[in-house]
Amino acid sequence: MKEHLDCNTYNLSGKRVTVYPSKSPVSPIVYLNSSEEEEEQIYRALEEFCCPDFTLVTISGLDWNHDMTPWNMQSAFQGAPPCTGGADAYLRLLTQQILPTVESALPGTPVWRGLAGYSLAGLFALYALYRTPVFSRAASISGSLWFADFREYVLTHETMARPACLYLSLGDRECRTGNPYLKTVQERTEEIAAHYAAQGIDTHFQLNPGNHFKNPVRRMAAGIDWILKRPV
Image 1 (cartoon, helix red, strand yellow):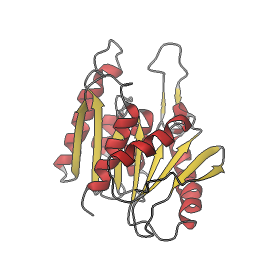
Image 2 (cartoon, rainbow, N blue to C red):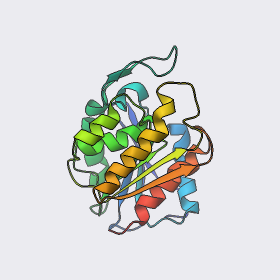
Image 3 (cartoon, rainbow, N blue to C red):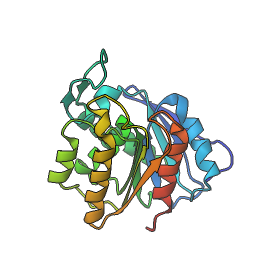
């Protein structure tokens, strides 16, 4: 990776898109749905991992309960707004506007595209594989795989293109809750990881110490680092 911060920022349909370009015109590209507050921290953390050269694209300004959720669901948290299933619409924005705008400004064509995210964005990273073939690697970090009917969706549908590799992670205390949705997260994440591995997909499940909110930046960097270092 580059040793000094060098980025370009776009505002596209209400989203803030920041591009940290690679040094080489022939390198991978990873799209990360995140918050504006975390994007530079994640880039700096990735420098510490000594990742292979790649282009990082962060997208923020998200409506998390809409943009990152595949279908409607009542809130898993008391008093919080419901999830309103806008993932397909956001994915069209990502693949038809954000991706072409970003990649048309790069000096070369990416050798592969990855998609990563934390929490609901980790859910979206896997869901997107079933709706578009443009991403060949994904990292679902502390993904909200407790989401209603998502396990069943994974087990009964096929991805649009076979992923080269998948990274799934979770905190070892995330399931220790009385919340009826969240307490299923480890069981469901492990089952989904096993489902992918049984298909012969290069799949890694990482159990980290702590709850959902411990070291999110470091966890995101670790997931991106893993997919970057898998063979092409």
